[in-house]
Length: 268
Image 1 (cartoon, one colour):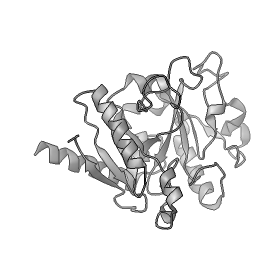
Image 2 (cartoon, one colour):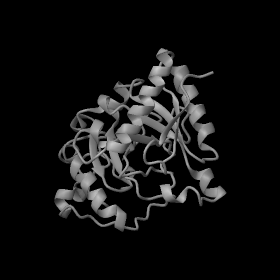
Image 3 (cartoon, one colour):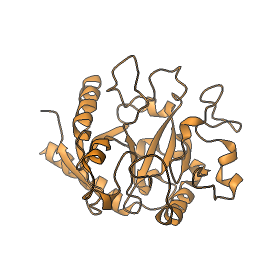
Image 4 (cartoon, one colour):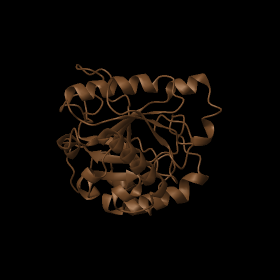
């Protein structure tokens, strides 16, 4: 009974958050935080399955931050995903390029001022902006958030190839900018769908809140490789943190009412 209750509660909660997410400075009310498996860990000396860590090692240039996207009914786009209207017409190649990822606990990341470095309404290539010393989140350097691209410095416009960023206490402004700009803009990012936003997270609280930070693992509906990879990463995660509750879900962004569906609550 407990298992079925937790399954129902998680699916219902995620789908409700997706439907009712809106511009706000509260992460838990804005939508769902999603990290898609990327190429950051390729070449790591340890298992490439350890995708929940911030970086390969503390010496890596990007080990001070992690990128995520915020999704809801009005903002249904993720990195390495397909836009909802393109799923049915996707080619086999496109379906091999879609990836799974992790859903993060918004409650554990509140308030955003303590966990988010900055927020962009579009992909910002934030990995190109490094701080020396690394992780120097000060007025002079914020990882992934160069001073000359702050929305306050660009008149909250930015150019489409280089979107401006908002500080964490202005998450609502980023979301409002997204809803104002993205539906009418052709943004180029080198991905299948370029309509996702980017939040640059502080890696320190990310690491401190493991394993509870990971609410679930997911793969996109129709993905040809995403499910297998998501299962592999989840299996490694659960072996690393025995007893942790982190189910596997399917994400169908073309279903605006209930995009999340339970696939496997606990490993067989």
